[in-house]
Image 1 (cartoon, helix red, strand yellow):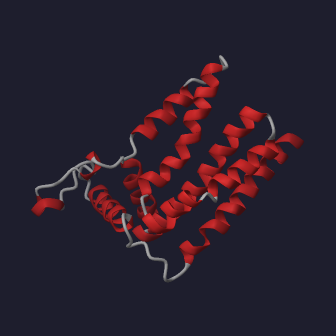
Image 2 (tube, rainbow, N blue to C red):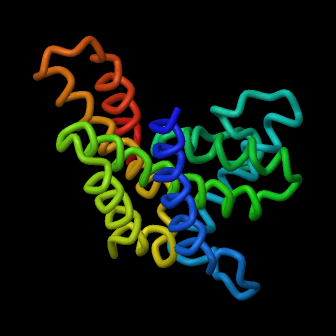
Image 3 (tube, rainbow, N blue to C red):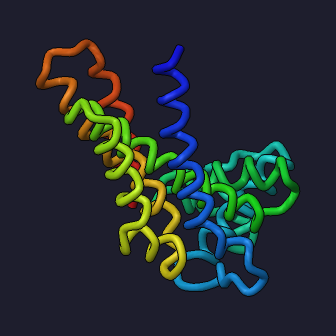
Length: 189
């Protein structure tokens, strides 16, 4: 029982760091229209419309003079579907976008924590690596400057790939972790 409480404490610390790093998302003047941000919001908006209209969300029917266009050929659908689903729940795509950014930050820290804890057998080193991973400049650049949601979400799956490789080479029966990480990482632009 003490071990589970200690694990929750590490997760709680990572959650606090994710909240602190994500605070600028709550500012009124947060600019999500920069670089790729508006494109991902538009994709999520059109995906939400297609889901609400019971149409195929893989071919967005509103584009190309209502002939439709498969925007997800060029970007992995995780970004548009996750923002669209959260946007449906909160009835606001921009809020959905911001929540997905926050969750992506938190989950990337958890993934790095799990990888490092597994390799080093030290939870404190895992916690430090999770915090450093969440606060690395390129990670924050994708979140706040570039708005590249697919690339940002891939930060979750990079540690998962390495965790799967570690499990594979140490003859543990968790090779499915590699499959999940590799399939998702491959599906990003």
